[in-house]
Length: 114
Length: 112
Image (tube, rainbow over all chains, first blue to last red; front, side, top):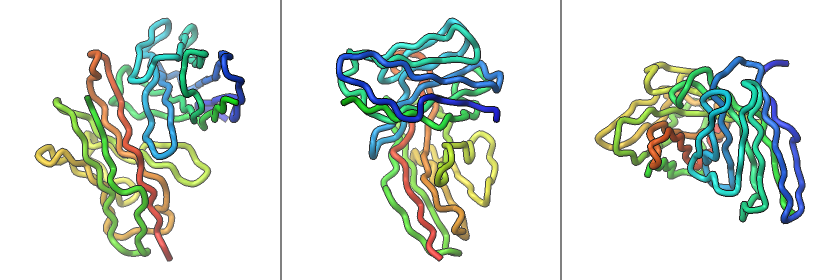
């Protein structure tokens, strides 16, 4: 089954701990994105990467970090500095640089901080 | 700052009736606008883009720059159209990078 995958589906974390969410794609896409979704709100952009070894902050990057060491992978770390990390996290990818191309979404990871 | 609003959280229509999902945006430049859809137990996926000027599954959307709107329309709703619909805007962010902003979404329920 190809496409974009996220793991785990559900994640629980104690306050004060960092946690890393996985995102992998086998679509040969250059660009990858991380979004956060809260109830009643649209998706908000956390980070995006247009190419390997390059990434840019989105609207709500504070408390998050990313890396893009391989084209296929774009992991997101939710650090203890993120004040309200409980949310649904979506990863996406697209062929081209920028945002005008179709984005393909993963199934999401629901993070709960206990 | 860019913003996308979708005034209706829930929209219910009967099968065969016309449907219009409203989307308004605020952006100082020329935005790229999209409609994404999420059917039950499926992933979020692109429905259509204004730049393509296409009709997908009978849906169309016209960009009205004067009213800063990008409403999604279908003349005859089908039960399989029931889903969550998100309007989205692509443009330059406040930090001069790119940004992609989603609206809060409208849940469309098509009743038999």
